[in-house]
Image (tube, rainbow, N blue to C red; front, side):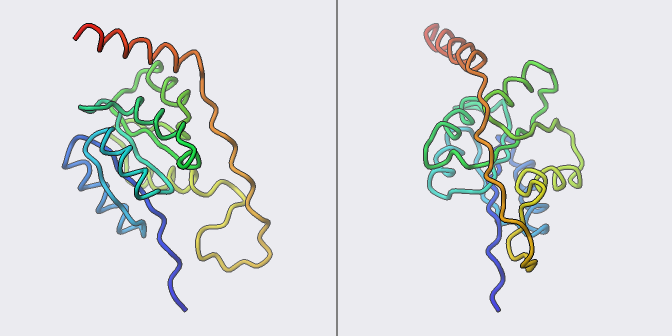
Length: 169
C-alpha cells in the first residue's frame, strides 16, 4: 500500500539559515518543504506549488510578509491555504495586523521546534479533522474550514501606509 502524500509547507524567510533549519526540521517531521527568500518569491511559489501551509516571516525585502499574506488570502485559488507568521516582531500591533490579514497563527522568534510543530498540527488538523493516511473509518467528516477573518480597517490602513511609502520614492 503506498504512503499517503506528504503535506506541503512553504517556508518564506529572507534569512537562509532559518530557511535551512526549518526545512530540515519539517522534512524530518514528515512534511514536503519548499522555501522562498522574500514575500514576492513566496507568493509566486505558493501559486505554482499550492502548499497546505505557509510559514511566513514579516520583515523581508522585495515584499514583506503582510503584503504577501494579503495576496495569498485574496487569491481565489489559494484562499484555503493556511498561514502562520514566524517573526521577531513581538509587538501586539504586528500580531493583530497579521491575524487581521487572515493568518491562522502568529509565532515569535526565537521559538522551539516542538512548539512550531505542535502549532502546525493544530492549524492543519483542527479537532475532528483526520491527518492524511488516517485509518479510522468511524471518524466524523472534516468540518469545513472557516473563511479567514480579515480586519478590513487594518488592511486598509496597512495598504495606505504602503502607498505613502512608495509615493515618497
